[in-house]
Amino acid sequence: MIGTELELLALPPFQLADMEGISRAGWGAAARHAIDQASRAFDHIQGLDVISSEIVILDGGIKEYHIAIKLSYSPKSLRQMNIARPM
Image (cartoon, rainbow, N blue to C red; front, side, top):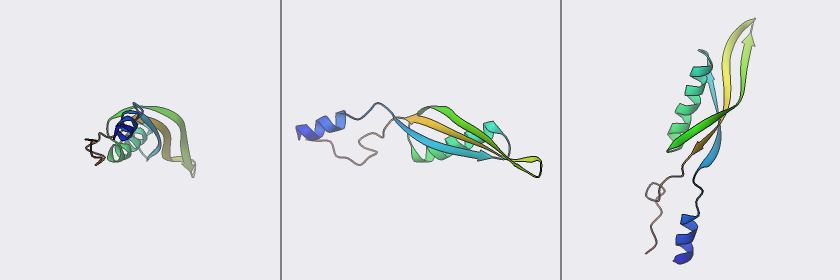
């Protein structure tokens, strides 16, 4: 039991994930798209870094804005992960 308890306590304070957002409305909307997707997958998002940005041009006009981000989030709690606490 002690080994299991120590393993659970050794979780990092945050984890990183790469996401991409796409929008036709602009950079801000593309970032919101990435954050909306991330919030469905991860709890407790703490921040993000923009890794790259790109514009897709079609027939001389802007078709889409793409933004690649790396976000940090806290791991889910033991209850959310359905892991029983050691007794």
